[in-house]
Length: 79
Image: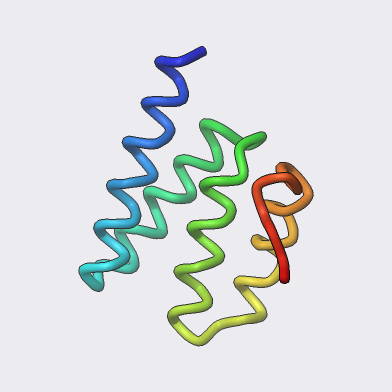
């Protein structure tokens, strides 16, 4: 559904904006809500992994990144 995809991307962009402005607690809540609403999309999982990675917490980030890749392996390209 195109409307659901638009909603997903809009919420993800809010979380990204919060993360990039240093509002990590609010960004975490947004990404966790995104995962709860769209658990089969890699976007929330990936963006939350990026947040944890940027905070220097790879042990938190890695399982989230693994989940994102498992959900949509075609979305990730490795060189």
